[in-house]
Length: 311
Image (cartoon, rainbow, N blue to C red; front, side):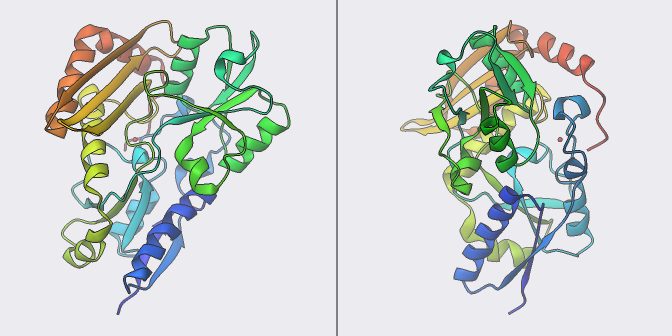
């Protein structure tokens, strides 16, 4: 049986994700190898994401390898993918989702409420920054890049009183020892697709589509399609202050979403129930735009450095 060549970034978390897919494939009798591919985002690890834009920064080179046939499958964090997939590719599977929420990590403090006035909080995300400052406008927010280990080391060295990271990454790497609080979505709304993986193939590759079909999780597919539909309606990438979380409920789906300005002084929140993921995402997106989200996002985009084509 031909080996499945999996393309991945080389970070600790990305390799965990690729190896997770590799193990699942091999358990089904499909041998697999992993090829590490350095992306543009990896090359500028010292620059705050909000300063450079993230249009394709973490996927461009991997998709090029996929298109050229150097790899058969790409494993991404779903939130790194643009809301519109290029016609050369398709998402063959969205595996079972990890915890999509954000986690408050600290050595000395049990929650964001316990932080002293003016405490330093590290995050790489405008979305997190906006919501933290909406909760605590007195806090100092500092840009934080690097892998999970390096971010936690900076916290342990005392460079920050707290950092906010995705719970999914901490859980996957077994680095939960400094998690003091996991935010409810109505306090810190996560990024669309957070905690989910995307297994991408070349469009029309029926062989790999069939091989990977067992990985696709119905709930993960429905909730993330809903969140990404909202993001698409708002015209947002992964480094704008937009949050979205869809959850399966008895009657269908419930979607919570926010749009905020970066300093948190204006934060719009909306939630609705529905049965169709795409329709629900678009409907909640339209409500947020009508409430003033369009003006907020226009200002955010105006202030950001233009991104290279391609989130």
